[in-house]
Length: 625
Image (cartoon, rainbow, N blue to C red; front, side):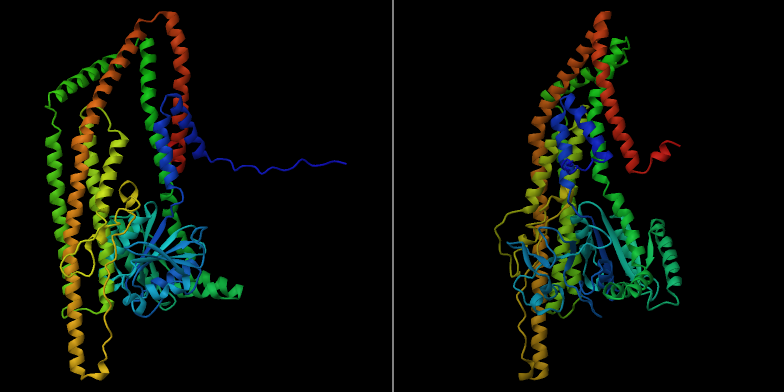
């Protein structure tokens, strides 16, 4: 009688990119760079689990929500209607352990920011005409719903609302929050050529996102001429901008795709789905998503290679010196003299540090003022176009869109402040032939995040219905500077409009009362626009003061220390090379026997990482014809 040995579950083998990264890590540890390499590894870990997103935008009544249902294979998930339906941005997220199917989540400005509800209750919070949304003391600013994984894979679909269905604020907020791979899916239909507003929206947004796909819907209703519309749209896009002429344009029927998902007969279901062309749209969306999801791995491999370049150059220089080559020796003398000169200049307070900081401060403050003026003018104009006033529905819609816009604008400005300040640090260090420490750049990001969050306590401003600080109080949640801005400004709460008993008073009297209340609502929104504009300016100026405070004080001290250490390292390296030149034959052989394996290890690790970069970017064939 024989017995079988118990089977043990085999661990999944690491992929080639992981193996190349580990090889870089081993080489880094050998050369006392383990801590710095760990920072690169943390970057990879932080990006794991982030969902890429497809941000869906389109004019009203173009079949946008129906198309989302078809992509999800879940009829009725996104609310549809003949008129403008969605009042909030809704994220359809593949279910996971912490967000199971059947759950939805509303995001608010106040604590608790995230509030769970059953998915079947979501409609009453996202429909623009819903009494729950219109009469809420604090309406939510956006929502999420857990869905079954679609053929698109583990990707979030973001349905964006907006006046007329096209809102740059909603689209850009969703893209910024995605942090990694994002595709902008613009939905038009086959009734005719792409409209001018949609064309201008597409041309503008395409400059800010990596990938755009255009879906031409309702081919089921326009079977005779959708092909002509498709070709006309392609020509219009190419004439508007050469880049747009190359974007994927996919004809699709969301209605057929949605019907296919609920069709019990398998043969008819396959026929409907094939005719819908939803599978071709999914293929067009997958290509840029797969390409973008490789970026964190590519960046980590590139950073690992860059980290090992310094010890490799040092070892190669020593090997050259042991062989009698002195070019590196001469270069090191020049480096040492340059850094010693800078050190003397810095100690004499002649280094042009504060003046450069002041120039950046003036530039950033002017940019903040310009952005705030433009923001305020844009939203005042939007509100004033309502003339005699606006009702509760229009107030909720415009205030929610303004909340999205302030998050986008504040995020862009704060990222600009960090980038300009980080660039200033890089320039100041570059003058000494050095790179700024990562800890300094991280401190710049942290200060900007704190400034963007702002004080928690509210302040009253005039008659505004909401504390304007709430709009910006969460704008830096999730660190949209180092990664991408992920928090929310906030939704601006409105007191509910009392329903008028028109049947008890003369018609004209009731109409006058309604107009008066609408006018009061309009004034409340205008007051909030003023308050938000002022708070936006104060937040950005606070960020400039805080971030440049790091540069002018903390960074200056660190620079002084780094410069001294750099000069010492140059002297040490020079001494080692001079020692190598004077070494005896036996000493040279001994040292070469130690150096060569180290150089081989570095070159092998860097070479494997380089090959993996070529593979991931599909350039290996081009590199090796």
